[in-house]
Length: 71
View 1 (cartoon, rainbow, N blue to C red):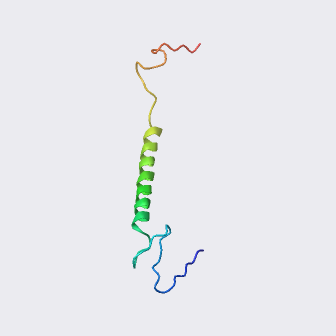
View 2 (view 1 turned 90 degrees about the vertical axis):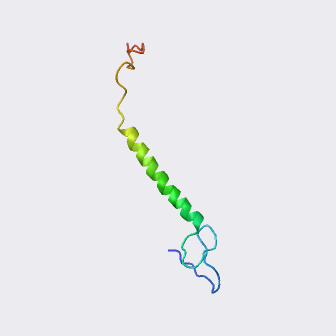
View 3 (view 1 turned 45 degrees about the vertical axis):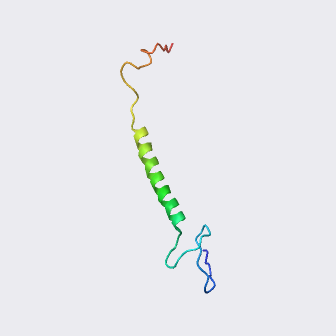
């Protein structure tokens, strides 16, 4: 557990070191970074699901049609 004790009259600081105004827990830069990270995780999850469910190609692009011999 990390407990920070601030001196009276000192403005509290964010984890990155920026000063915070009264009532804030994190600065706007850290909030934006967290928001970007959440969106990026969601985007990666969507892309991962999309690639997992893809079937192999069918039709004229099979190995034998391309002249590949497995002998």
